[in-house]
Image (tube, rainbow over all chains, first blue to last red; front, side, top):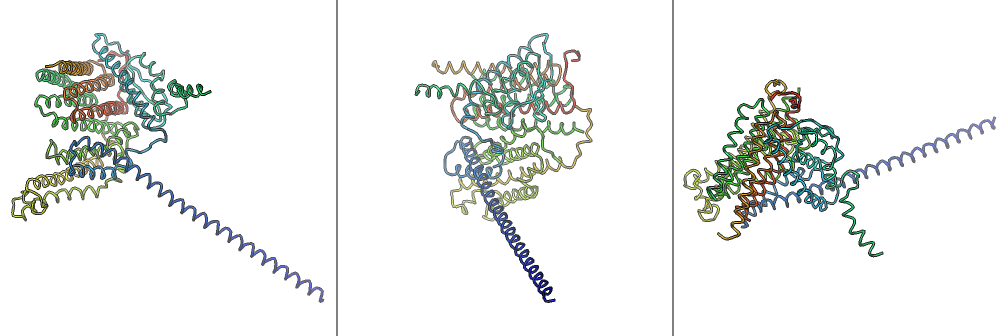
Length: 240
Length: 88
Length: 154
Length: 108
């Protein structure tokens, strides 16, 4: 009798211990979970604050850059350097740079801006030469009595990515001989060409390569890149 | 020199009259818009030449710039309006 | 409802041009007493720049920058500035818009006071012209249903 | 009239007459070409170079000053705006279903 009582007592005590242990584990687990949750929340809050500061910093940078450009433009337009007009210009360019800070620098690509500008300036003489050729071509077509044109629409998919390079490519196509950009849908250019020869010239893709070279897009090796690197290579070889 | 610029200005005015044929008889709205845009471009140069003839080019250059701006915006607005009309 | 264009070329060119057009418009307004132009012309260019933004970026994105409520407020502020300067001259024993009487308040010579008074009036006029142009454009383009336009007229 | 001013006058005449010539060809193209898109070829290209030439001529006549810089500014603006306007009109025409002229059909 006493033995069974003893055994039961021991059983119940074991069960109690077991329950206590489970409860303790549960409490510990929930405590761990709670701390980790709070930590995540804290981290998220910190990250939000950090991101907000970062975006505010980006906005501030944009406003400053726009302000500098617009103030320079104002001084050039105004041509008066007394205090009254400079103050007016300061206020005006400040207001407009606050209003339009996300327009001028909407999606700037990360890259070497100085090199891009230098390459763009080097691209301009070629473009002006192309405009000359195109105008003489149109003049020849207009003044020849039979007017040998054979219009056709060609379409090609471009490999360029950013919007600025698209603008440069489309406007260059419009200005070069015998072609105008008609439409752009999902990265496909629809080009209206005046003759078969002109269309073949465009399909060869020289202009696209040049524009890609300016904005350093599309993984191609260009002659100009090799030429850019060659002086460095020459110096290295001399050192050896 | 003034006589030379006068001759150039008169030549441009004659060209504007030729373009006016496209504006009046051009088949469809689009030919008319293209012709009006071309007239605007010629007018811009005519205004500058008028400035040289009247010896007040510092004044006329502002007017010419405003003309170029409004010509561009007007063409874009007309193109946008017709494009919306074209989509069903 | 003015939709934004799906053409990336026109959108990019417009977004590069708009700040320069606006600073040019303010230049025309502020230099109205030396060169041609002034309040009305500058206001028209300012309104045209916002209209360029409207036809390229759509109504929603533009009203984030300058809401329709702000446009209504601008149009009344412009009239208030114009009439306020005129009445201020009346109160100083002058005629309506007699700027030289303002020299008592501004503490300058009458000639400079006249120049500043003209500048203030021009700013008022330009505010009103800009706001009225934009509100006319918005109310025209949002009420009519363009889809009913028939295709024969092209 | 010394030598420098004569050279300047020659350049002014050369550029301005070149501008007038390209304006003329673009106008004749606008009148002669058979359909809308080919006419845009004439106006879009011809007018850009013609305006550039005329503005360079007037800018040389005006000399190096604030006004000359503003004329240069107009030239840069036209260089950016004219192809964009051409593209906008041609896109609107294409979306509205204008058919481009082909060599086979003989309608004028």
